[in-house]
Length: 227
Image 1 (cartoon, helix red, strand yellow):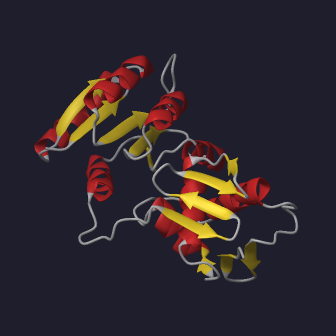
Image 2 (cartoon, rainbow, N blue to C red):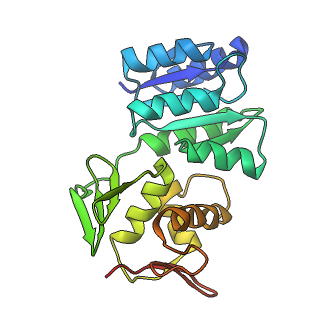
């Protein structure tokens, strides 16, 4: 049975989510503040975390950051009444997988949970490492280096770079990259890709304003070139 940690300081909302997930056959864990959420995440190892953004004390951003510092894989779905682009980008930068706006539509929430827990049948294991010239991406440790110098990337920056590096020189549309990195079930905008491409260029290119590796294909999207 999959275990889902529900983190929300509004007890009625947390209880409603718990009830509907239990009806769907999931096991559930509850936490009503950020400190408790981190403790439960560390001790119980849930399969997915539903995390409220706005909580007193330790908010959802900080909980997400701390969980991601130890756990890169567990899906995190953020609940928020704040849906501006900057709020979304900050959450994604910290490693959230998805956003669900309040008031929560429970059927939508259940569908999102199932989508993130669904395993792709027959999926091939990811390769241990990808090397393109001086660029090396270690898939196990999720580290990136250029000419043996480690580059510090966020969770989504790593995912985006790895997606492009698996098919060097291939032109990806923004929608293709968005679907691969954020998932087709995430309700966001492909402009998020542009933001993360800019961040990658700032970290990987000698001159981000004149990139040599992460190239824009005008009217189409992006491609990665690294000889």
